Image 1 (cartoon, rainbow, N blue to C red):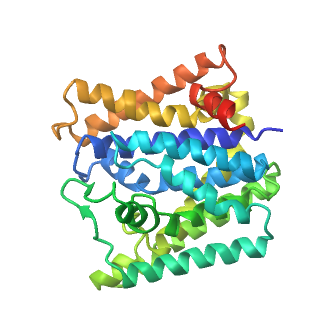
Image 2: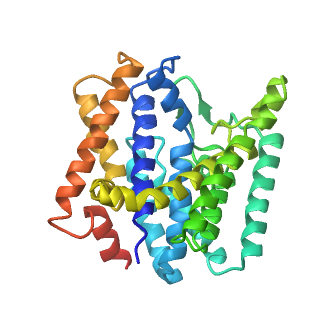
Amino acid sequence: MRLSGLDTARFLAFCGMVLVNFRIAAMVEPTGDLPSLVTTALEGRAAALFVVLAGIGLTLANAPALTTLKRAAFLFAIGLLNLTIFDADILHFYAVYFVCALPFITAANRTLWWGIAGVLTLSTAALIGLNYEAGWNWDDYTYSDFWTLTGLLRHTFYNGWHPVFPWLAFLLFGLWIGRLPLGTHTTQIRLILWGSLVALLGFVPGSLTTDPELFELLNTTAIPPGPFYILSASGSAVAMVGLMLRIEPTLTRLRISPWLTAPGRQALTLYVAHILIGMGVLDEVGLLDGSLTTVQIFFYSLIFCALTALYARAWTRVAKRGPLEALMRRLAG
């Protein structure tokens, strides 16, 4: 049985990424108004939900290792192409996550948790001992030596937008969540409660210090990704997964569910579309020059999300899978 609530959660994660990425692309500075606060709250959390859901999907799919490797290669190729127009691409990171996660897919739960602990330990040590600024130009968020071997490895594993250390922890955590009886009400309620509690607890350490350097390590912002960011974002992701699974029957009764699950099942296609089409249109009409307000870019982002829902719902009458999902299945199984 397909857990449609996961598709709904995936679409909401996509919408969160649209809000964040459109604001980044439009060079709109955060302010104190409500749209800006909402978008800022989603920074690093929408993408984290995406990765946790990917881990859940790997567990539920139970695909052969070769199939997972083929899909990783497909995502890496698409991601590299995407990088030529959007520096904050996440697809090539996904590919590396999948490869790194292969030994853990069938491992015992204890091994999974040791893997998560190891990833967080290494990433925290790297934040303390290495230069996180290396390669970055923070004025325009460009990475100077990405297309060199050293820069590519540093960006991918240490200080890129979604580096393997520590973002692999989200995927491993998702692998564990996927082993739970997600269709039961008890599990769903526990995910909501425990996820919310962990998300809130993640904010505590950063609020207890006034030291700028220590705060950078203890706070919950995604850049740089400290251990308490991973803790808090994992909690919010789990709470969202539990909530969407729990309210899915209600959404179905209200006939809302198909409009949310259809785009959730085309997350790969829509992710690429929000860059090629969404940002492309904004660029063509000259709106990516920093001239928009936070309210305007928020409004444009929501319009695009609504249009993707309309498209995906209509597409289900034509084909079972989205264009890129079908292509990946054809090439990678």
